[in-house]
Length: 403
Image 1 (cartoon, helix red, strand yellow):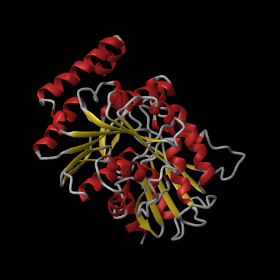
Image 2 (cartoon, helix red, strand yellow):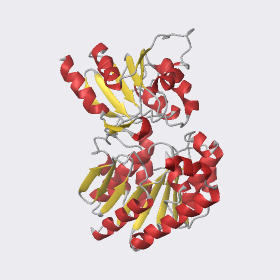
Image 3 (tube, helix red, strand yellow):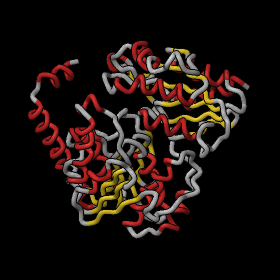
Image 4 (cartoon, one colour):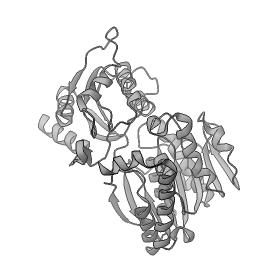
């Protein structure tokens, strides 16, 4: 509470200098480890963690000792542990410590997930980025940044701070802004880039873009496309990203929490999409919307998308922080048009019961899609309370009980 009050009363320029000085101090304490590493920063709205997982896998197969940090996990060489921070990009001291640990372990390359909030707090400063990667951009964190343009501007700062190599998704409508930032070498990927398609084990056509981004980065460091294909086509999945928990019924858990992400997940299984991996399924969808005063604009949009693609809709709780979870759920439900079908939905406050209910009603030919948390291991409640959580394990337990 005191921290929140101080943030409100402290002038912006004072906070800005504070964050910058803390970034410098962290780098100083850990002796600027990035100066002896090849650091790759990946930013965008969607696909960052998967792209990082792909890059790390390619490097590993190619014999390069690499470290990586993402929303999903931390990895240094063969050592791997979950990211339980509820923070995609670690704080300045944790980040510099991680870089020092990677260097001490003999790593030559480090891949970091870089967020707009992290950039705004100067967490990227005093890290020598060799390559910056842009995956895509869609509205997110709009309220905290004060508009989409400001959100995009924060992402662009990573590229401004990286003068060597830029890797950019040329198919994204915001690509032009990133292409305008000067660099020694600019590499693009997309449908017409010639990078090629991959026979991925992971569902979702959007993962083709993540694979292309990873291959473009690998090419920068002398790894050819054939080696990339061999590495990526063996990847069975990234935790919490289109993760299949069961086949009959098919139960998928995904981190999707923005409208664009959610629609891509739904399209993967939708009977209305000729490219759907599964034909004519009944979609049973469990969704919510995180609270904490963030992106309340998207809540009715999520409800509208669920109505568009799902035959059964269960709206539930999802990291409410200090907001009333029922109010959040009602805002999601407000996007469902009573004049269109399906116009029925249920609101189940207890997320565990929501997941169990979805699986209980599913027939073997149905698809249950659980979105919002992915592989996250904590749920954040009011007054800073955090409880252990795992959508995937709850789904597995429910599937076992249903047999």
